[in-house]
Structures are given as structure tokens and as C-alpha cells.
Amino acid sequence: MEFDFAEEQPKFLMLMYGLIAFVAVVGGLLLLLDVVPAWFARRREAQLVAAATSGAPLPRRRKPREGLFALFFLLPTLLFLVVGLVVPAIRTTLLSLMDSGSTNWVGLRNYGWLFSEDSIVRVLINTLIWVLLVPLVATAFGLIYAVLVDRARLEALAKSLIFLPMAISFVGASIIWKFVYAYRGDGQEQIGLLNQIVVSLGGEPKQWLLDSPLNTFLLIVIMIWIQAGFAMVVLSAAIKAIPADIVEAARLDGVSPWQMFWQITMPSIRPALIVVVVTLSIGTLKVFDIVRTATNGNYDTSVIASEMYNQAFRYGENGQGSALAVFLFVLVIPIVIYQIRNLRQQREG
Image 1 (cartoon, rainbow, N blue to C red):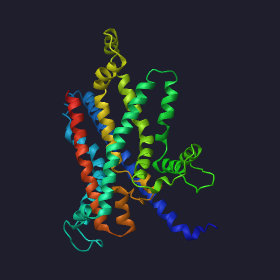
Image 2: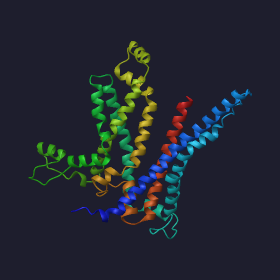
Image 3: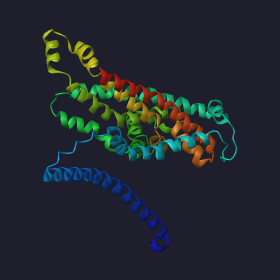
Image 4: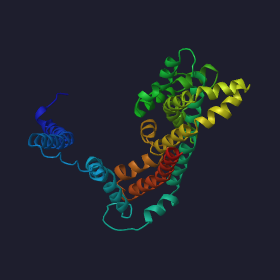
């Protein structure tokens, strides 16, 4: 198939316009942040030179208005926040109160559909399973890794290997694990690692991603495999931050390794544990790539994010897709509020 530049020219023009707009906005902001402070500095320097030349008293430096300066520097961020988050959130909420064509108001009917449709209830249950298992299991594995490799030989190499899945995108990891779960019929050579192990042990190959609810747990394994490295890095840093005198005093008191873990390590790294669990919980609630790549949400594996995409963009049900988006947003809010309160308590403590 030959490439026709003339046919693709509108796409290249659109790409060029986008790049120009990006450079103009970002470059303008950087220029503004550089020019304005420099202008004030040059103005102050000119005043000092003029006062020294004329023998007049030095001009009193006005007390900086910190609120105005803070607003000036925060204004671009606030603008992008409003345009990219607040406005879409309001619009999505309004769409969730309308029908599939976004023309007529239907009130809370779409939200009633969330809890009355059996397939959507299955989606909500799947999401709950993800949120319960992924943060806890990934954090547990990360903690085990962090404790085992702490101050061990080849610690850097071991951490690099464990953290390596974090460098792979969710789509790439899902493709890798689809090969692990791959199935071929009886009598054929199995290319899937899991089925090859089963066959070598005398069992029958199985289509792992077709059986519910087993397939949901197998998809969860992918997420845990990716996120355990993140948990390990954060918790390992927290373990290394434990004061050495506390650890030495505990050893002098004759505590066992098990007592050291529960009485010294766990209380000391509690803030880091909370951060990891909260971060993984938010990421798990929004999981989409793994389900979309591995099963496309079929065979009772769909979660809120994938179902939201299907309803809004595949089935044309804008109201129901928006209702799922709003419901997902509502689920994330309590976790975010808890994290903010926890960070505030840590600063005050």
C-alpha cells in the first residue's frame, strides 16, 4: 500500500497546527514567567542607581504581596485545571441526566440503570474485586520484596528486576500475559506458558480467559505484577529511613526478626503503606488498558472504566456512559479526601 501525501495532507496540517499551538502556549508561559520577575528586578535596580546618584534616600522596598505573586504563578495551573477537569466534570454530570442522544432530560434514570441491569451489577462486582485485591496483594508483595532485599547482596540488581514491569505499559504487559494464558487445542503444541506447565504435569490445556470468575483473577495478576515493583520501591525507601539507633536498640533488647518486623518496621513505615495503598486503589479504580487489551471486557471481565467506554463510544449510550463516569468519579473522591487528610496530619505531627 503506497502512501499518498496529498490524501494525508489535512492530518499533517492538523498535527502542525497542534504543535504550533503547544509551542505558543508553553513558550508564552515560560517567557512570561521569565520576563515579569526580570522586569521587576531591573526596575528595582534602576531605582537604587538613581537614588545613589542623586544622593536621595533609598526607596523603601514595598512589602511583597505574596497572595498576588502566588496567584500569578498558579494562574496557568488553575486555568488548565478548570478547562481540563472542572468543565468536563460538569458537562459529564449534565450528560448523565440525559438520554442516549443527549437531547432529553431523564433525571436519575441512568443511575437507576447502574444497579438494576444484571450485566452492570456484574461490572460493579468486578470493580470491587479489583479494588479489594490489587492494592492489598500488590502492597503485600512489595513489602515482602522490600524486606527480603533490604541490605542484601545484589540489592540494586534485584530491585531493578522487580521494578522492571513498571517500565512496561499496561497494554504491553497485557499482551505479554495473553501469551502466558494462550490456548491451543488438544494435541497441538501449547505456546502459552501456563498451559504448557499444565500439559507437562499431565493436565488438559484450558482457555483461561474464557471462564468466569477465574478470568477476572487472572487479569488482576497482571496488575499486581506491574504494581508490586512500585510498592517495593516506596516501602524500601521507608524501611531505609528508619533510624539506625532504633533498630540497634531493638537488637540489643533481643527482639526476634518477627518482633522486629511487627513492632519496629511496620509502625515506622505506616505512612508509606497508606500512600501506596491509596495510590494503588485510585489506579485500580480507573483500570482500563488491561481489560480492554486482554478480553475487551467480554466473558464477564468488564470493569467500570471499560464499560463506560463501551457504553459511550461503542453503543452510543452517552447518558449511561456518563453515569458510569460520574459514579467512578464519586468512588475516587473519598480516597482522595482521606489521602489529603492523612498528609495534613503527617505535616502537623
